[in-house]
Length: 345
Image (cartoon, rainbow, N blue to C red; front, side, top):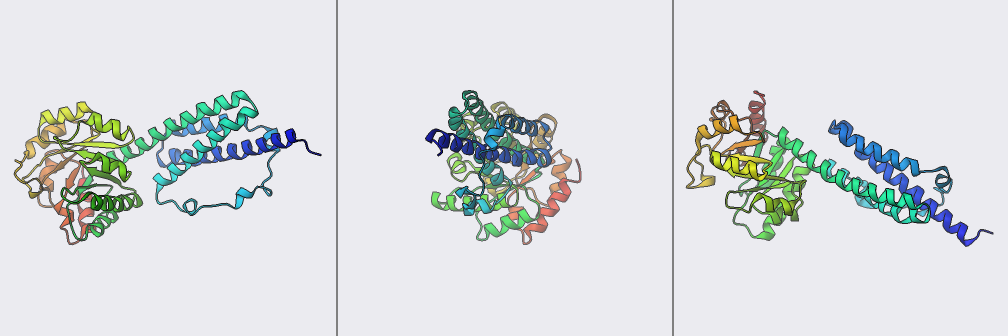
């Protein structure tokens, strides 16, 4: 006859075994992306170290308690586990998986070995830090690789235009709409974010930090009259991207000092998108090209006819509105812009 103590001990061992497997599997999934997707030795090394540390605790006596045929949880599933919309959702799901498993290990290992509980607690905080650093790194890597930036304006077929541009290779899109009700903005921003993430592109919200948080955007773009970057950073955290509009060298230097991840440079030409605002001109583009070490996008009235002039002034990244929003063929227009921007490295 099995004693109550023996039954409890075996149950604890089974719980530890299942969650050690879970945590190590989740870490391996994250590690593979760090290794092959990001080519980042530091992140993949952290994952490997955590897996190996967990492996030390995965002892023979814990493994011996495994009873896969008798585990009722093996047949349980959830629709969200059967699909992943993009690499971001895949990584976040596995970070959650690892963190939950480590929390279970932290508690139940107190009935097995006190040092194991302390070790799992420390690992859980390491995983939180890794998640923050990795997700932020992914976004910033894509920002550096982005050369064309679509800033939206209201259009009846906005989602079709956005998807066509994304199909053409667009990797950075900003939702900008000044007059719509918040409920409308929330709905449109959510749909655009889903589109962007489906195609592996960054999604930025204009001005509104609250809306960026509400729809889980990749970041926010702030004008000179918007909140200080430091406050936006407190609200958004270090993972997300913050951009700032600039029109002159002083504003450029101020944005960099504040910690902007990128800046907008312009308007290069007068544009109805910024009605009444004087053009900053190509001289400012040239100044920024010689003095700015963070990603920057020339913006304002840029189209296929003047793109070469802007590039000759030093721009390697541009942001456009009407050139894509009003294009009859947004996919082809996107491909044209990208082909020109990639011509000169």
